[in-house]
Image (cartoon, rainbow, N blue to C red; front, side, top):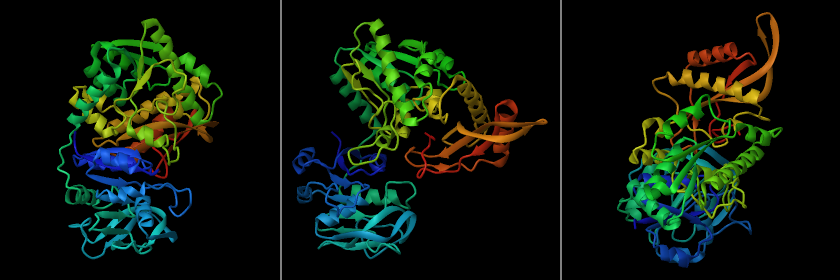
Length: 507
């Protein structure tokens, strides 16, 4: 077993980024509930512990706190944001509401000598997101960084190997964030950095075999990155015990269903295509709320699987390509639900399968792509444009109809064609059919038609992103083609919102 860094979750939205940050430095990490006992932590024998951020105020009675005995185990601890506040509060410090909250990249100054911040330049811009701060450090701690409005922006107690940062070193927007993590992992925890993704494949294959045994598994194969890599990993683990069903819910991009069938029908898989577009549209008729759409599509997926599996004989397990960002956005024990994912929140309790297999649930999108390449998947699949499970249903604002689907498919096709010509492409780009109509003029006639929004983002982890500043001539061609080639569109707009505060998808 590899060395372990234990990440205790207190509801912070960046907890998976903490895990990703440690793994990118070749140190294995696992996320556990902040309620875990010190005895359980001791059994896991981690090299270090990281306490995540969270939305609560630690001085309130019902705010989550870790087992205080964890601080007596002699294991190095790094508290991030709420994690720092909680550690300081529990060890005798004072935490109070800020006079001025800090959000975004904040100028941060290193103060004095520090083990955690060793070798890092003095003036940094670190991502902050807090309305509380540590106003009095516990005995034994010293201040190691400050901002204009936060005196104790970072602190440490080298004797007990306790460290706290109010900022988020795990995100790309923090200067030298990886150096902070590197100092904690290697200089403080003494990790050797022997974890590699090949280990993940080996461990996961063994875990699948142990869970499934000789029983059969059914996978919904969309042809996307996640489901394709999931299929490859399951195939490596259990071979012919795997049956892949492609449910064409009628919510795919232009011509995509036929492409998926062409690729996978030639693979050494039991590939079945189910054309269920009419069935899904009937279920979605009149539904406007995005969460309700996701729930309906998630349940209908499972019902289709059950119908098909009943024709195939006894299939005991359902496989899903759930990845880490899906789980974090669907909420956790202490966190808020940002949005439900069809393969997380939408799975009904009364599904007919014995169990669910999710071999990618510990991976980020970039890790999934690396795993896919290691498993020999073609570049076409590994680098396919991300596409949500509920498909175009959540790129259509309001109710979903066949007419709207046809309109959006063509608009999205134009967006992908034009942006696809660029030498340097954004990580993700697509069209959204808004629920807004706009006055326009076509020929000598007044129109009152749909508004299409274009989305293009730069991201490496899909937990945060910045909009891509596309060249105006590209945006101009997209607008000209969409309004010229699609009769029912009168206006095209460009989304320039990052994540946060927005999300990659509109719904």
